[in-house]
Length: 332
Length: 224
Image 1 (cartoon, chains in turn yellow, red):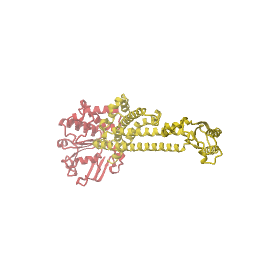
Image 2: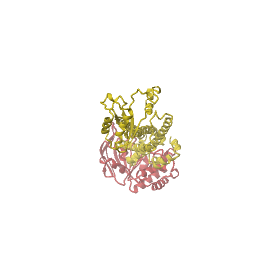
Image 3: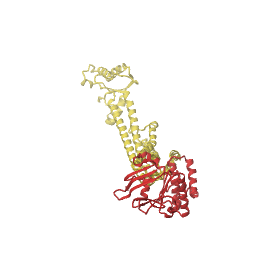
Image 4: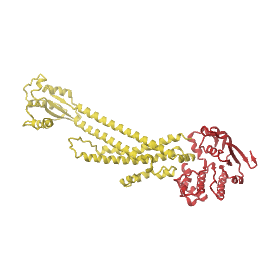
């Protein structure tokens, strides 16, 4: 496996590893922990699998959080004003404007909106656009010449864009709009935003749980592999002890090997995850973007994934060292 | 330097392999340890190189009670003891040079000094041409010389040798004994466990005899 990684990295991995943690140094220091390819339990492969899962979990969380942030950003700066169609509001309110036309109602709503300082832009949604939105349910045949059957009491909609950092008096606006045109409502999308935030938090929490679980599994694997190594090399360890080797002298040799394997596993897991993500990215381009929301974090957001290999190496170093020190403590 | 008082040792629930052992090795002394197979020589040596704690009695080494020495202090104590094991216990993956260098590396000696000292000593024991040889490629006698070189490379204060001349011819045995004598003259306390009666007879040093777990001291004039 080392050869495969060396080929892929053009030898950079090998140089980095040998510079930081030369395996022959550990061998000369007494313990023949063997080549890394002979490591107990193939620890590097286990760490690679763990790193792969951790990378996918992190990407999933990053993508969801990123999409949620974009949705939230898109929704929080906007309002939708819904004006009931002429002839429907009378049923719900004592309307002085019984005979007001849709156009007149729209003008009254715009009068109220123009008076608001926090509103940057208000755009009526055309009946053609509303017809397009309703087409999946009504079908093309349900539409009249101007886009909608005249008999349908379809409300008029106004898209409102708020000024950045505006402090809009939303309850007051709702009251003023309802006074201008009875039955008019304002949707500030809070329900949506709350759902999106909840979903994002859930995804991030799930990803953290997966990463923690993966880390615990990796720790368990390192502990088992290290104990196997201690059992295999107990004679050499006893000899080193009799020569006056301190526990940390022996522990450092196991820790160095675990670090190499952790680094190698982390790099391999990240590489496989990257290939998998590229494959998913390529496949997703063939899907209609209207059907699939954009769930692709930016390169900058993916940078934390580069922490996986050093994190795996650090975790392996710490775990192996602690395991050896704990085991040696029981010896005379 | 080493004092045993009423020391007993048993493994598990078995019988005592060492009984009521009183032993004193003065600093700079030289002793032979003899006795038939199974008499407890290796057990006594294990107590001496701190691989084993006694079941009873008191052992003091380098003026410290072994029972009360904190575990973190043991490595420093062990570095003052050189051991030649009967089965050599060379590490098979290391060359002769690296095997002998191991105690120096464990002690954190500068690597440039390590090379010089080791090459010099291995040359002295006649293995200058086998520095890079792995133990498996060496004869029993050559392995034994590597083991002895490893035991003495740090100039230990106490040298324990278990059958150090068992696998070498008389000429090499004599040469190795001269090495031990030289270390002794330099102040090292030496204890050599051996079956080689002629080696003991030729020497002026006192003999400690173990039999049935009991230790007695024999001078050239008789049993003490």
